[in-house]
Amino acid sequence: MQERQRQLRAEVRQLLAQAEAVDAAEDAHYGADRRGDELPAELQRRETRLKKIRAAQRALEERARQSAEKAGKPRAEVQSAKPADKDQYNFTDPESRLMKGSDGLVQGYNAQAAVEPVLQLIVGQSVTPAANDKQQIEPMVQVIEQQSGQRPTGLLADSGYCSEKNLAYLAALGQSGYPIDCYIATGKQKHDEYRQPCSRGPLPRNATRVERMKRKLQTKVGRAIYATRKTIVEPVFGQIKQARGFRRFLLRGLAKVRGEWALVCLTHNILKLHRLCNA
Image (tube, rainbow, N blue to C red):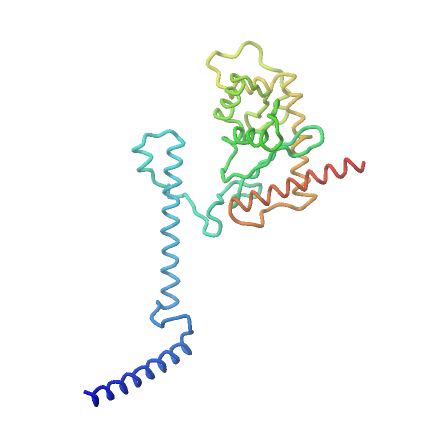
């Protein structure tokens, strides 16, 4: 037994030495942080891509369910909702969305800014992944109240904000004792559209909120008030885009983009106040 014990110890030392030599050789060949049995780089890249695609499909399915839920569809339809074939997912910034821009479709975010009429200061700002403004009146009114400390008493907005949902929210505010005198364009304006005389006679009882807003903008007072919009908010966006050259976000992810836009709006207000104090 003693002889056999010595023999086994010698064999163990020999096997351990061989194992260490093999480990050293494999470390030199594959790298110290690799085992050598990993998938080939080409196959590994495809496996990783497949995982990302599956995650993107799950995200699109979840968006479809959320969209169906917001539309008020029955629970069964919400659970079975599927994304359309044309729905897209951006792998670089999944929280961004495909939107219509002045130069065509762009991948990005929807930046919002509310401007007061006296000094052109931004009193409310936000960023949303929503592709349009059809549901943005309510969150923007809340943002203005949070960031400026008071609720607006008047509101001017372009046709992108014209929807029954937005107008219904403003009507509900008025009924609850917080009226906002709003003037929202009901469509893309044609030349001299709101300079035409206001139609005579009462509106039909079943007129929609959009039709009532259109009549309001056709009145002499409505035309005059809405015309001031081009001297309030449009110059601010022009100053940010053209004068300061800010035309695209540099960061990715909704939280970071919101911080970037907040910084842009803050510096806009600082510049306005600086010029006012040094005038």
